Amino acid sequence: MLQTSLRYLAVVAFAANFSAASALADATTPIDWTSVPVEEVTLFYPGQSSLQWLHSPEHPGARMLERGTACTDCHRDSERRMAGL
Image 1 (cartoon, helix red, strand yellow):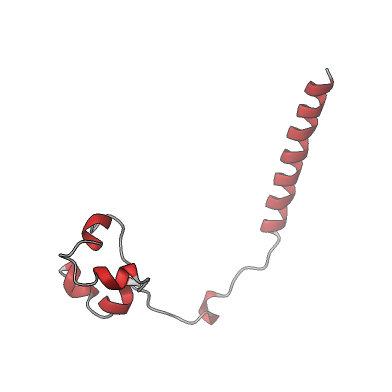
Image 2: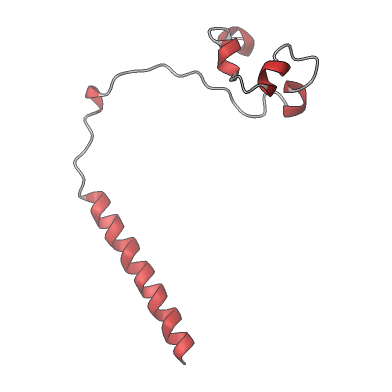
């Protein structure tokens, strides 16, 4: 009986906390997106190249990847060409 009451209390407390968080989220001031600066971001989509290929001798940047270099360090401004756009 005590375990059931504690479980019920935990569920009710969780639901109350979730409801309160939702209510607070609705009370925020809307963001003025026109004041946010525009920034172009390069996206590399997962699955375009396998992790095995990226680390293989066939990939010219494999050694740099092993050292922690980011893809964008080598491929900056070449993404459109690589994607065939």
